[in-house]
Amino acid sequence: MKKIVLATKNSDKVKEMLLVLKNLPLEILSLADFENLPDAVEDGLTFEENALIKAKFFREQTGLACLADDSGLEVDALGGLPGVHSARFAGWHADDLTNNQKLLDELKKINIKESAAAYRCALAFVDTDGTEFLTAGKIDGKIKIVAKGNGGFGYDPYFYLDDERTMAQLPVDEKNKISHRGAALKEMFLKLKERFL
Image 1 (tube, rainbow, N blue to C red):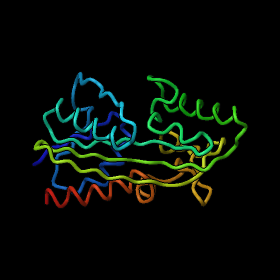
Image 2 (cartoon, rainbow, N blue to C red):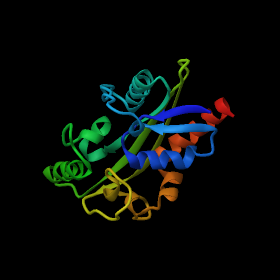
Image 3 (cartoon, rainbow, N blue to C red):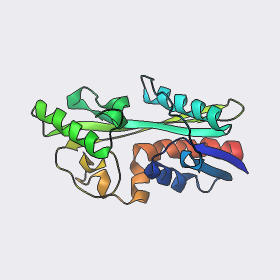
Image 4 (cartoon, rainbow, N blue to C red):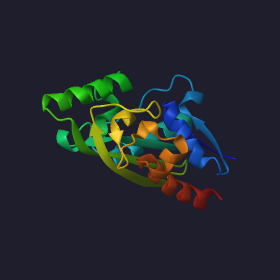
């Protein structure tokens, strides 16, 4: 059975990806299955560039086909920030708490309580023979300074949908149906299905 590595250490992302990819004839690993792997240097200017950088880097590190994502939040009132820096908005060792606090601080500086925003995701698959697939997804919403919900991760408690629920209030299966990552995953699933079935 073909092995592929999900090039992330984020267990929440792994769960979301496994839900979509589980029906493919693949043995799916994550970076947690390997010891002492260095971090990829994500110096791309777009989510697509960073996803490809990660997929290629971890294919070289593991010798296995790799699927990597790069995703983030773009807030209109902040000129598209945090964008490709979403995971490290508050610094290299930032976590969800510090990143969300930085987001709130930046909005308070400009006296904004809500703003149009979008979540974006790019997925890159790189096989051992060099074959590459890229897919992308986007969901529009609003960022508000009041958090709601205990689920999800990242900026989810502050990302409001049209029905006034946040991404953090959605069950994982519902989130996968509408989210930026869900859209990119559905398209990637079809590409991988065509390749491996």
